[in-house]
Length: 363
Image (cartoon, rainbow, N blue to C red; front, side, top):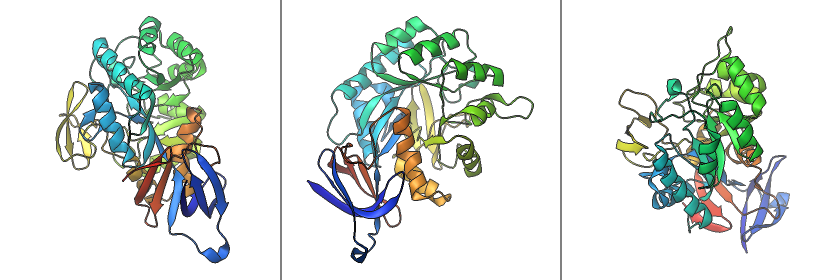
């Protein structure tokens, strides 16, 4: 059984303590005052519910690419993730889903646990593709049934204004799939209809959706008014820190995602995002026309940015792991009996160690 000493970060309190674990957390105990305050922080492992790739690998490219991506993100503190697709012809989506399913069913050493699929498209608005390839489809329950048969799809991003979208939202909700509004040109009223049909989340909030206007609040306005859950990309490029602070005040279960693509962890150059060629430069990833195309963010860097923007370690823990776990109803956190998925940060909040099911995987 392994042991670590550090400041333990839990939802209710943070305290100097010792954690003992094997595959699961076996014991938690506070340190005596005379033992001093350890100069490290122990948090639940990061959970990333929106990640396309990393270290040159793209989730659309099959099993080995998904494994490479999962190993890369594990080295940056992500202990569990949703492999995220892009809009593509159905035969390419089929191949991608089969590859992801193979990793879900047979996880490998050193890999972040792939919890399933975040299907980003193809049921999105052609008017709000962002960096998504131009293969959007109208929502179809029949098509969705087939895709669900190929892999465990946990989250679907769609545009609620499309014909058939509300019926698909209801169907997915009945199947236990989380539906998120994103890549959408919906009005406030259309977004409200999606919310009332069962779409609970919002994909990379603010980006690729109708913005807030005081006479037409749009999807952003609906989210700020009513949402409980929404993801945001805290890389400093996609959303201004002040806009994130406003979002966190309005949406209590805001959680961080990377939206990382194959270029994450690699030098500047040309990479793929589905059928698109994308260009990494200056810390960002762009289409040829300058449109942001995912990010190069990793969850350890997301945590550091949030800390630099004034969030407490406890709040960062909530945004990088606990909220996402609650959203998918996963057992996660520093509690006895929970899986020993852990991140250790040093006194400067740099990543010191990562454990998945009690096994050290990095860095």
